[in-house]
Length: 333
Image 1 (cartoon, rainbow, N blue to C red):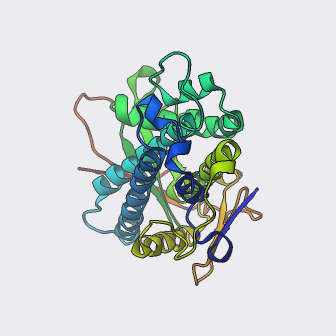
Image 2 (image 1 turned 180 degrees about the horizontal axis):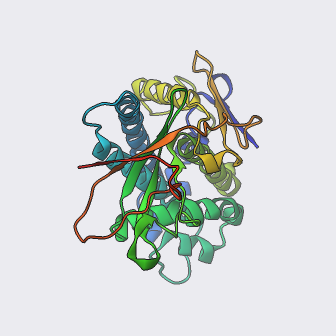
Image 3 (image 1 turned 30 degrees about the horizontal axis):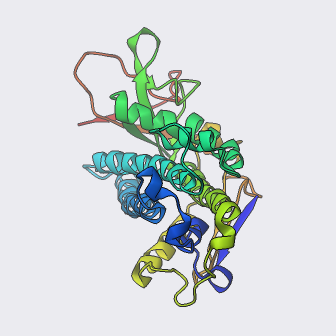
């Protein structure tokens, strides 16, 4: 599947829902009768959180990669743990904001409902089922368990890297209790209890879903309110988004597109998205799955794990460590 956005055709390479929502007249929404935020406010707030979080994550990962790859004395692991956790939370809230928008395209449900997702189902919003059919697996099976553990389960995002003379792959796992009280990759997130996620593949997958979710939301809005929508605006192609914000988004798109397909060993057979952005930033093309294989994992690479040793005396289990041939460096703080 491909998603393409161009400045010439679409006005910007921002995700489509931003423009579609802005083109709906205020009187077409039902937010007032439901006592909700204006959909434009709800969605732009959520999207802005995602943008800010991502713009914070990318330089933090670059710094940590350099520190670990070239044996920095004090790698700033805590910054990445916090900033990437914030990004995951923002992506989850972005999906909730999509339901808030869909709730406002039709009449209020017969009975008062607090949760947007429940309300949309009760309203039987045309097109919402197609949205859920695609997004629900990403939200409930991938993103949701991670966010819930970080938010409610006292779990932590733990950084590790595979390093060799020729390769470097930075990644993370969400820790949690395993059988026997050992702390290791959380079973609800890492189902084999012995794996991790590379930041490279994880970021590409989340980037794809940010654009895909936006496309699906735009489809629902256009299906229900298309006859009332204003024409596509002229100008800088970003509606009320300041030009400097669009420029920052283009820089972020370039950074995402430059991510190399260097993944964790168990991710080498998994599909991943391709992101293509020309130097001009005049377009973005996303394709999932990518029509090419990831780079071959270097079997000579060794693990470096960055752990904060907590109180309690529990044993720690690192992913991919199962025999004496693995060399593990634990950098505690």
